[in-house]
Every structure is written in C-alpha cells, then in structure tokens.
Image 1 (tube, rainbow, N blue to C red):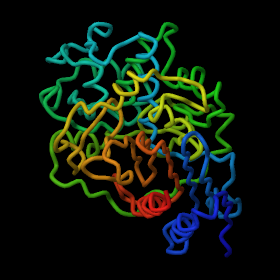
Image 2: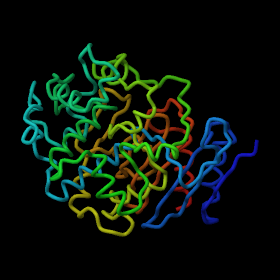
Image 3: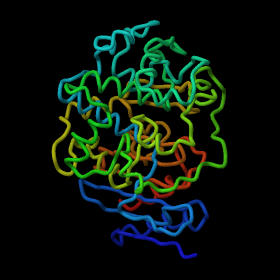
Image 4: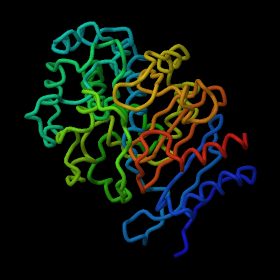
Length: 377
C-alpha cells in the first residue's frame, strides 16, 4: 500500500522530510504530522499516513491527534495568561484562594511549585477511588485538597500525569473572573481568536475529526517504584477507563487528554518564545521569563529522569529531548508526541502521531526529525 504524504517544506529541509518519511518506511508510523514555525512563519508542515484504523482516510489538515501530556503546555499557557492579567502570581500560595488545599502541610505551596509538580499529589491514594471518579471534577478536587502528600511538598518533583490537570484547572477556575474551566479559557481567550486547533475538552461535534490512536504494545520503563510512581501509574484506579473514548475526549482533564493538530500546538508554543500568537502580543516579556523559569531540579520521583521543571513546562537541559539548546522548553505526551519552544532560535515545533510507542519522553521518531531540523537551520 502506498503511503500518502502531504509535504509543505522548502528544499533546504529535504533531510527533515526524509527523516519524517523514514519513520513510515521503518514501520514505526501509521499516521503522523510535524509542524515547525520559525520567527512566526511556518517552515515545515508535514503530514503522512492514515487517520483511521482501516487505513482508508489519509491524514489531513482538519484532523486532531490525542497528544496526551503534550497538552500540559497548553494548560501552562492558560495559567501564564491569567498571571499576565494579574489574576494570580506564581509566588502566590494556592491556599490563599483555595483554603481547603492547605490540609496536611500544603498551605505554603505556591502556584509555581504546584505547576512544577512539587505538590506530592502524583495520584489519588484513596483505595476506594475508581477510574470512573476522574470524571467527577468536584469529587477529584476535594480528594486532592484533603490528601496527604506522598512526599514533602516543595522538596522535590513528582510528575503528575492526571492530577496536574485538575490542580492547574482548579487554580484557573478559582482565579478567572468568570469562573470558567481551563478548557473554556483556552478556547475563548486564546484558540478561537487566533484560529488555533487545540482543545482541553473536545465537544462531541468535533469528535469526527479525531484520528484513530493505536496504543503501545510495550510497557514504559519507569525504573524503581516509589510511592509517588505507584500512585501516578500503577494503581488500578490511576487512570480513567480507556473504553469510554467519547467521555474521555469531552472531559476537561487539562493535563492528559489534549486534542490538537501539530500546527495548532506549534502556533500555541510561540507564546513561550516571544509572547506572541499569530503575530499578536499575548504575554509580556517578564511573564515569558517567569513561565520558563526553572523552579525545581533533580531526580524526579515518578519519571526515570533528572529534570529541570518550569511552570508547567520541561526545560531541555539535561536531557536535550527538544534539540541542542539548553533553555528550550516543551512537553512530551504518552506514546511519543511532543511540542517545544526554543526562544534562542525563535523556533517552535510539534510532532504528533497515531501509533503510540512506550517512550515517556524522547521518542526516537521525534528525535530523528528534530535532529535533522536543527542541522538545516
């Protein structure tokens, strides 16, 4: 079967196109998209493969991928947007507007610390919790506020695959002057005005645009099992029920179920480069610095990496999953997707795919493309 491609790139990026196509030739891809934006201009828009399980519909401009935790960058942008409006401050204690959160020694935690996974709430520790409970926003928020942290808050990081979205989402809801969900703020204030196809909570009317996602056939390699890791990934209630796809897409989980196009995410990441989105000023210069600022460093309690974590973004050093520049910020998603912003180069990038692998960060398919891209610049 001939693989369909839609390639929009100048001749100088032939090696990037070749790297993109080689992922299909090696059998590692079913459907995928790559977009790169340099100084506000799209320099690469690559699409290939199939959108459906039967491999009958080619990937097109209108398709949306489940990019999972890559969408944490979109949630981070909403919090930066609220900070830019003086609705909140990164050094502000969460308990000042969410008093219940102060339980079990969490009262001193700042928004910056919560956004950088220093809260110790990597998952729900209640053995009565069920996958169904994640769809009840109020119940989840109450459980997180009342829960004892799994490590001393503010001392280390513990990556939070699902709870991040609830914590960021409740911070957004409580500080937004209209009390909107984080997904509503993203759509109404950021994406709709700029025609950006990124969603934290996808309406049913948009579901026909979602591509078929093939789950990984291998388990991820986490390393030593800590209490924080067990709560985040290994409990039978650690994730939502995967059979309820419609409900999962519609939920405003904010950190784990983002639906997006590669071009949409690449455009969105521009705000972390120069504060603009599609040429319009969105974040002040000091806010760009605050959101990119490293807030915790060291061995993470969940992911098997040493990490430098900013306010909802991963800083490229020391793992260099997002090219050669240490100050680049980005995020990766379960199965291989990633998006990043390189302020030194003025470059943003997103890779999204339909066939998920077991990479936690630094998927080899994406790394191959990113390496080729930087070699051309």
